[in-house]
Each structure stands twice: as C-alpha cells, then as structure tokens.
Length: 436
Ligand SMILES: Nc1nc2c(c(=O)[nH]1)N(C=O)[C@@H](CNc1ccc(C(=O)N[C@@H](CCC(=O)O)C(=O)O)cc1)CN2
Ligand SMILES: Nc1nc2c(ncn2[C@@H]2O[C@H](COP(=O)(O)OP(=O)(O)OP(=O)(O)O)[C@@H](O)[C@H]2O)c(=O)[nH]1
Ligand SMILES: [Mg+2]
Image (cartoon, rainbow, N blue to C red; front, side):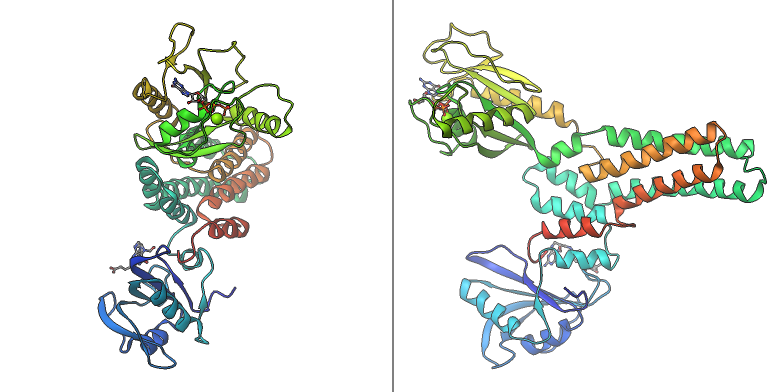
C-alpha cells in the first residue's frame, strides 16, 4: 500500500439510495476529475456536471462535483468528490470507469483518514474520535465522540506532555550544572511540584472508567431458570421478535444480543440459555456460555418465575432479582422488581431502573479517557512519574530520574500518536469503513 497513490472509494452506504458519494484523493485527483467531468471547478464550490466514461466518452450520470485542493482538504492532499445518483447500476458504472484508470486504485478501509493523520490534519486521539462518531449508536456516545474529535483528550495529553518535558528540562539543566549530580534544592522542589500536579491529573483521568463504558455500552445479561421468561423480556425490550419463545424449557441455547438506547445511553441486552443441569450436550454448552456472560456482565437481571423451585443465581458483579409472569401469580417472590413481559406490566419501571443503573455506571459522560489504550498509556506515564518522584526524594541518581521522566513523556505521546504507534494504526484504520 503506497501513500502517494491516488485512491477512490464510495464513501456513502450501500444499497439503493438517493445520492451516492464517491471520494478521490491523491496527486492524480485533478487529472481524473478533468477526464470525467471536464474543467475543474473553483475549490469547494459544488457544480453540476455530466460524468463521462474517460475511455469512451459515454455519459454515465449527472453529478454534483467538488474540487478540494490540498493541503487544506480533509486528507491534506488534492481531493475530488462526485455526488452521483444512488442507483446500483450508476454506482457500478462510475466505479468501473475509475477502476479502469491506470493512475488510481480502490482505497483500503480507513485509508482517507490514515492520510489525514499522516499529513498532520488530525492526531491519533481525533482519529479515534472520528471512528467513534461513525460507530456511535446513542446520543451520549455521539457527544463523547464529538468531544474527542474536538481535541479534548489530545489537548489534555499534549498539556501533560509539555509539563513533563518542562520537568525534564529542569532536571537536565541541573545535570549540566552540578558536579555531584545533586539537584539544587529549589529545582528539586519545583520539579516535585510539577510532577505531583501532572501525576494527580493523570491519576484522576485514568481512574474514571465511564468513558470506556459509554463507548462500549453497558452489558445487561438476562439469566434465570429455563422458562423464566428471559426471551420474552428480550423481545419486549427490543420491541421486535428477536428470540424464539416457547413453553418448552431449554428453548434458548445461543447467546443473543440486542443493542438498545436507554435515554441516550447504550445498553446491550443479552438473552441466555436457562440455567439447569442437562443431559443435552448442546444445551450444556449454552448453559456454560450463559454463566460466562453473567459473570462478565455489568449487570445481571436474575429472572424468577412464579412456578418451579427456587434456584441459585450465578456469580455476578451486580444483580437485580426480577419476578416474572406477574399476570399469573404475584405472591411467590422476594424480588427487586416484578414484571409480566407478555402483557407489558412492570416494563416501564424496569426500563426506568435500567436507565438509572446505566447512568450510575456511565456517569455524566464527561470522561477524557475513552479507550483501554489511553488508560494503559496513562498508567505507564503515572508509574514512571512515581518512580522519578521517589528517585528525587531519595536523592538517587539524577540521570535515572530524568530517564523516568522521559519515559512518562513518551507514554503520554502515544495517546496523540507522536511516538511509536504503527501497530495501533493498522488495527485502528482496518476497523474503519471503506471510504472513510
Ligand atoms: N461531502 C463530504 N461530507 C463530509 C466529509 C467529506 O469529506 N465530504 N467529511 C469527511 O470525513 C466530514 C466533514 N469533514 C471535513 C473536514 C475538513 C474538511 C476541509 O477540507 N477543511 C478545510 C477547509 C474547509 C473550508 O475552507 O471550507 C480546512 O479545515 O482547512 C472537509 C471535510 C463529514 N462530511
Ligand atoms: N403468562 C405469562 N407467560 C409468560 C410471560 N413471559 C413469558 N411467558 C411464557 O413463558 C414461556 C417461556 O418463555 P420464554 O421467554 O421462552 O422463557 P425463557 O426464559 O427464554 O426460557 P428458555 O429459553 O427455555 O430458558 C412461554 O410460553 C412464554 O409465553 C408472562 O409475562 N406471562
Ligand atoms: Mg429463552
């Protein structure tokens, strides 16, 4: 994959649509645009043109055409956009025409954004924010992604890195000036104070897990004995017929997930096999998957039907007992909530409770750290600052204290992609859509 190739891709969704957006980026963009749409329009001014096959001159479609020269474009290089009609044959014809050209090739997933990053148009934290915007399914996720795209995490990281580099400058200055390698007292005090300030801020940012929870969604597992009404509840919460419901105990075997939006917060509801001993090997596999999911869930709803004997809930981080089929009998439980998923009774209360639980675990959505990658980098920086601090306090070798401070700056620099992130890039960009 060469980064000076000219690339093209459909950037809009697939299937029949009103309009389809085709992006072209790279040094040959101008030539290609001229060969298909005639004279290149003024930068960033949309014009209507008849698109022609560059080989045969055959008219392909009527298009809205944009010319966005580098370095001010999204990718930082010359870019053209063709907004064509969204029919399948039109799209195929324009793609075929581009595909027949010698001077360009189809883009890989995330390749436009990779170029924007490589050309310094956005930092790595912003690229992740962009990925999160495309994947956002709820309002709170969208807001968090927009804050990251706006530079919230990147600016914080750059600020910390600058402070740490100032400490490094102080330490290096005292290394130059003192023969014994002793830090003058005022410099030591100043360094310690700055280290503590940054260490405190980083500690606070990395302690907050709510950004990661908001990005990934909260997992709520429906568990209980067979026939408790788990699949009926899943269908009611999803408002569609996702899982098979039947009076036969042991109907569900696979784990079934549905993404829900509860008051803007992302909640993944997981239906599982009813927990019981079974001679059926497939059902037993379902039961062990159910137990594993319950154990890792943010919240387990333990469904208790009125009939049948009481069974013990699986180990879980957090568990609510929900009595089911309250239309039949409501005498038999000791539960946090009661519902009849089949009639809808108690569902508004259950949903309100789930929203509360989600809000408590996700918080205000004001976290800076949104991925494990950020937290790990900050943990490394925090550890290095701890060690440099201890070294200074104990009047250990100044070179070693400075080396730890340098390590801290490096770790913080990984967040915005200033340093050593090739493997991160490949993974991140391949998770993008083609055309982004
Ligand atoms: N048609 C279209 N819509 C789109 C995009 C796109 O590439 N094409 N985007 C892509 O993902 C997003 C918008 N992102 C963009 C960000 C920066 C620039 C850009 O060229 N900015 C220049 C100058 C802008 C100007 O002068 O008006 C700059 O910031 O210097 C373009 C798109 C969402 N919508
Ligand atoms: N009366 C009444 N019946 C219900 C209610 N909820 C579920 N049922 C019935 O209970 C039976 C079992 O429901 P499911 O939702 O399949 O139960 P499950 O917990 O998913 O069962 P397994 O997948 O076998 O573990 C079905 O016949 C449902 O129609 C309810 O609120 N009221
Ligand atoms: Mg079921």
